[in-house]
Length: 258
Image (tube, rainbow, N blue to C red; front, side):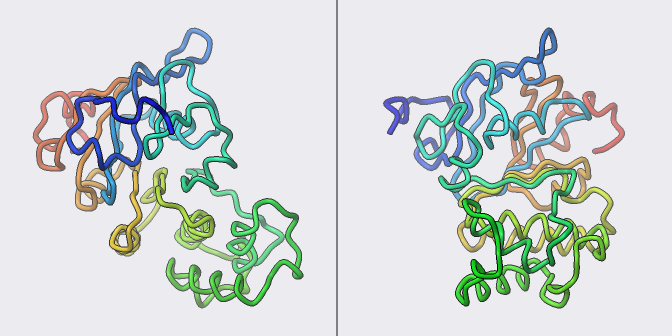
């Protein structure tokens, strides 16, 4: 365990932090995508992580999930320094994420896509598909709303179905912390409500979630707390009500999305 695990960042609920970023910076050449960013995610909350296009939200997720290493700063998961660790190690530790661009295996059924996420260290074949794996996989498919389409191929699913498959594949890794990138994009109002209900049920079962989205109304109805970034820097943090009324946030969004 890291000797830094007891250091304070000024966030309340320090002992309940699942994830903590301290002065995280990510540069691409002369471009700073994430700029000295610090915030914490508390055990059992749904945290909204918002900002205008190009604010650095997905890049932050990339750094946290091990897709890329930050240029500077430190990332702690459950008090342990995990900065720069590869994604497969962080998945085993309990961190999963979804992507804006869905990445299903198009030559596998819905059921096999979710099953494969549970055996990440081996090439998948029917022999890997043990009875216990199949039972757990079917439970995940039911949970995310794909129970009736498990034999379909990904290209047969509508957009909302592909989103649910992306979430199902993430759940197959049995995460404690789920990072969700733009889940409401392209969904109808009814689909947004169903998806929000799914996230709430996951939190009720003990999972911690961080959700990026541009649909402010859908997101602010869902989350417990919000972090707002603009040009890679944190510009606000607070409850959904506080964020709605924050003039700095309203200016960042040019008054158009809140």
